[in-house]
Length: 356
Image (cartoon, rainbow, N blue to C red; front, side, top):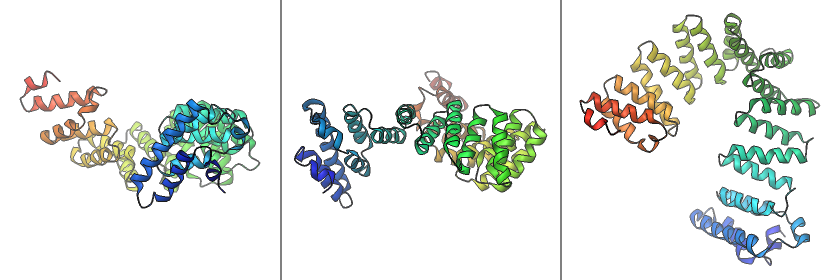
């Protein structure tokens, strides 16, 4: 019998409801989620108010992950996380439950809390490579690159035969942390085994560029983009190096190739759009801004550039409509409001622009 079957006598309503919800989810997803949501709230309340988990033998023998994973399967991530945290209060050293919580925090966008939980997991299991790898990745996602670098270093040290993806991540963390010598050393070690590793060549090229060695950087970056065209940073760095070398047309051509290689990458689209605008090719840049905005509708930067370019091309009404749809973001992004006001002024409606 499953854990949930064994649990029926302890909380028949909540746990049976979650089981039933999973069974009917495929045919009735909305009903299944509602049923499981109510059941999880009832169980959470019981844990907190009635001490359902106070039986010490039960607390340490029950594995709650089956039930929690059922909630995740139903798309109830927040409910699963709330229950996991309540259960952790009675099982504070349950590393599997902490790791599960870290994963949910990450999926819900709370990277800092994900780091905190995974850090605790690693503290309790310091020699587990997979858990250290997860922590290193989370440090990177939170832009704590020096911590990421140190954690990747431990992953490599614990590995009898480090995999190339770990070594590449280690090099990238060193680059992002500003440890350019270390980034180049790690990458050169990778190249000893794989001379055509585009990721390693890209890190060396970016490190050289950061140290203003543009001539050498360009050579590495060209090779990186040829060997690994699906990696974006070398493309952007190559365009930056070419622009710094006084070759804006080459930089523009590089960004065109980047967008061809990575047509769904908003950063590439934005970079190409900006490069087009800088040389007066507004009409060419416009569709790239539009696509970047469509791919990242919550990011105000593409929307602002798209709107500005529309207005500069004389499409004032379209620009205003775009910004009106983003009115809820004006409070935190006054540049959007300013751009809208500029559109009103262009329409000789300065009076309406004043309150904005």
